[in-house]
Image 1 (tube, rainbow, N blue to C red):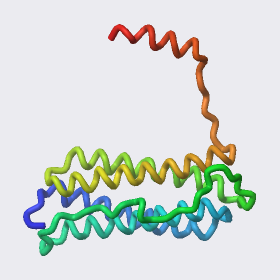
Image 2: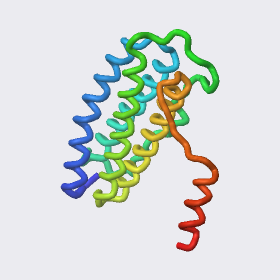
Image 3: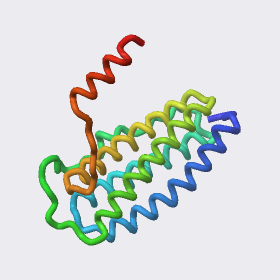
Image 4: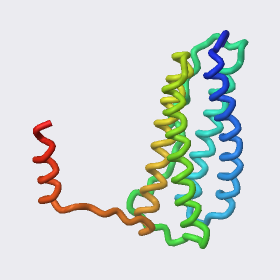
Length: 171
C-alpha cells in the first residue's frame, strides 16, 4: 500500500504493540483457566487478534497494493455453550473472564475510534471490521459471565420505561 497517511501508520503501529501484549496476556490466561468455554473464547480472541496483526502488517507493507480484507470471524469455529453452566470452573476463571471482557471492550473501542481518524479507506474499513469482531468476542465473554452468575444487570419497571418513552416521545 503506497503512501499511507502518517496518522494511519502511527495508529497501526500503536495497535500492533497493543496486540502483541494482549496476545501474550491471553496465552497466559488460556493456561490458567479450567472452563472449556472460556478456553474456547480466549482461543478465538487470540486467533482473531493474530489475524488482525496480519491485516495491519499487510496494510503497512509498502509492497502491497491489494485491498486488504479482514478475515471473517464466522470462519473461526466455536462450540455452542448457550445454555450449559460450566461445572469445571477454576479459581482464576472469574477474574480472567471479567478482565478479558473489559480488555476486549477497550480494544473494540480503540479500533473504532482510530477508524474515525484514519484517512485511507481500506485502513479505516479494516479497523471498523476489527472493532465489530472484538465486539462479538466481548458478547461471548458477557454470555459466559452472565450464565455463571458473575454479573448483575438491573432493570427498571415497565411503568418507568413507559414514562421515559412518553417524556421523550415528543422529541
